[in-house]
Amino acid sequence: MNHRPLATALLLLAGLPTATVAVLALQAGLDAAGWRDLLSQPGLDRSVALTLFTGLASTALAWWISARLLQQAFVTGQLARLLRPVPAMLATPHAAMAIGLVFLLAPSGWLLRLLAPLAGWDQPPAWTTTQDPWGLGLVLALVVKEVPFLLWTAATQLQRDDVLRRWQSEHALALTLGYGSGTAFRRVVWPQLARRLRWPLLAVLAYGLTVVDMALVIGPASPPTLAMQAWQWLLDADALVQSRGAAAGMVLVALVAVCAALADRVLMRRPAPGHGQRGASPRTGPVAALHGVRARAGLVAGVAMVGLYGVVLALLALGSVSGVWPFPDLWPQLWSLDAWRTVADSSATLSTTFWLALASSALALAWSVAWLEAAPPDWDRLARPLLYASLVLPGVLWVVGLYRLGLGLRLEATATGLLLAHTLMVLPYVLLSLSPAYQGFDARHAQVCASLGHGRWAFLWRVKWPLLRRSLAASLAVGFAVSVAQYLPTLYLGAGRLNTVTTEAVTLAAGGQRSLLGAFAGLQWLLPVAAFALAAWVGRPRRFAAPGSA
Image 1 (tube, rainbow, N blue to C red):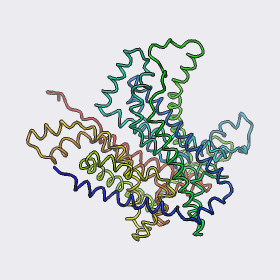
Image 2: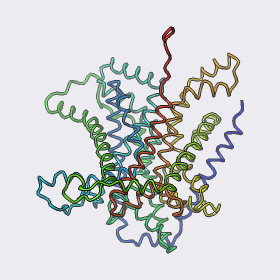
Image 3: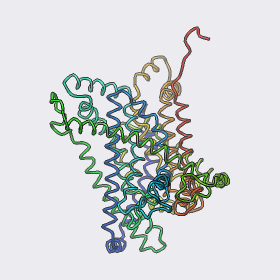
Image 4: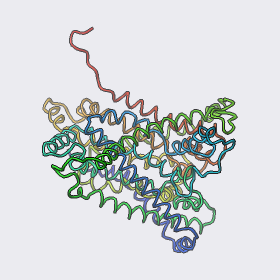
């Protein structure tokens, strides 16, 4: 059956608006007056340096921790155990994590309250523990959010039976040649897996270099990162200042392109010669101790990360019901549900968040399934860079293109415009999540089904999609979580008339309403977690009763 007409229609449906947004975004950053104004700004070099440090450091740490955790899980056969907490971690929006870390690390936060009796503090110390000038708080927030994403995308590869069996046999063969289990993983399995994680890594790198919502909550403020600076300029009413912000977005494009090219070159590099040579003598003394520490460092980091997520989520819950809470008291003096009553009264915000996330993720899933069914492999390979444009273009520049497209189509402050903006952001994540399982589906099932006289639709409805329901449900949950977390597209296309829990939470982060901030940030987490829980229930293994059992 010829699916090329359908593939063409699907490519136009998703590719045309994506390409239009990208072109409009890039055009906005080409104004000569804006560039002259940008280059004359004091502190620009400092903002660029902060951007590079926070983006590269967070990406490198997240990549290293993910590699260590995957190595440990692969060689011990505990991949399922490693992935057990990942959905709840992945469901935590970036802004909610940043807010929770502020609750934990701020001078009046819970950690320093815990240390106050030992240090003799009766008021918060004058320390810059959040929004520090070096961006360390932002690096921490990015690392703890990006590791679950990398683990999740790696799991979509490792859960393919054909791939996993081949890598396990190759790993076993390397063991017979005298390599240790860790060395065999690094030299045989990891290079192949790392190449399959190329697009997820580039997405993590681009987000780290261009993040706005997390930087607004926990990032450096004087000076801010370049993405934060660009966002502030783009919100200005002066056209020249807006052009300056768009030019800063183009600088971010250049930074992402250069760093992505370097990362891609490193990713495609073969393991260094002599790294874990076959038959190497066993390490002894301090060298052995150092090797053991390094081998377990990733595992320790993973356990610490799970614990950090638990503490952050507990503090969000605690903050949402706190009333009077003077420093250095460890617990509030007064408990109150007023914040949750306010949240319950915000029915418009809640309904907008829910229907927008559900509709955009459903549309993205339907498009992805149709595309993976209809697109020839060559078309799919060539179209991926275009379809992933929203992942790698700086968010501050992407929303400029979205806003211009919305104005041109008269979709500003409309539900349709906001749905278009969210769907274009959600689609790459859904496609990225679904592709490994869908493309790895055993084609022999279709041949058996056809030999029994069943048509294409019978095969899809009764064989393929039921067998892939776990991946389909998980991809839908990923899309739902991505939509809930969207800040800049909602801010620009919603134009203040259509708000979600994320825009409310980030706005409240600038104020001092701890309980209301905690409630909205907690709701940010609860909605995606409910989606992942439902996906887990839908994708649960089928159980069959034994013959003759009651």
